Image 1: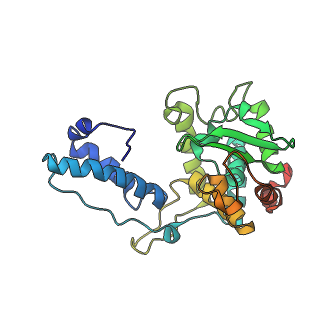
Image 2: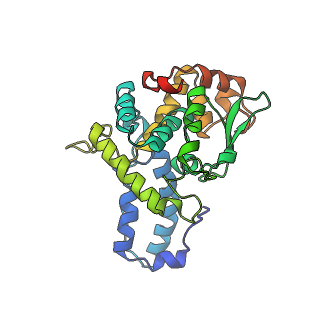
Image 3: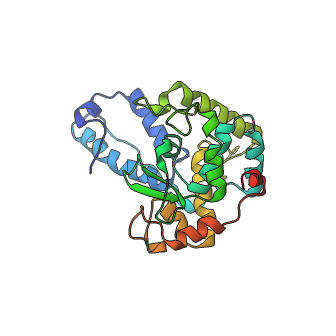
Length: 276
């Protein structure tokens, strides 16, 4: 299994205290998609089995992976309106929120977009062209008018920066999500989620109070996919970079007319009217 991170030798030197945060991150209570959890556990299992063979550890506990249909969380229209109102003091975040619900980009991809990613297709229609950081796929995302308006609203806010969302992260450094901008953004988003009282989907396997949403951008991504798949099954998967077959596309850089039809016709939320 290809593993782009640490070597086996490095893993053999890790202490139990160093392992535990990683295991906690992959625990079913973490707000990661079931597919992502399963993927990382398949890779980590190679190292854990090797650690057992060389007597670095005696045993490890296999997780009970959550099923996607049980834990999937999307925003309701009422929740979108509450978030729209709550983000008003932070116009950059408000624009990012709108783009998330309409484009389905991952946080790193969305907030790391340069202005050069905003282009037009052969028909002169606005698109975002970028390379996904997680998968390295080249993608082209059609833009609805409201999404384009949200992006254009950023120009006077980013002080001539080459980055669309400059101030929410710092794409110019090696680890943008460890930058001061990103840390401040996460604190603001956590406070907004708390003020809107938005919680995870209840998990019957974990009784007790349902925690607040941990990864609101992932919920926005899931909401985007659900909206478009409701219009035509497969459009959401194309935008998320998961599958081409539902829209008979040849690649993720060539959205079909079916994708464009969905992007232009899926109803927008009432609270987005100022950008429609």
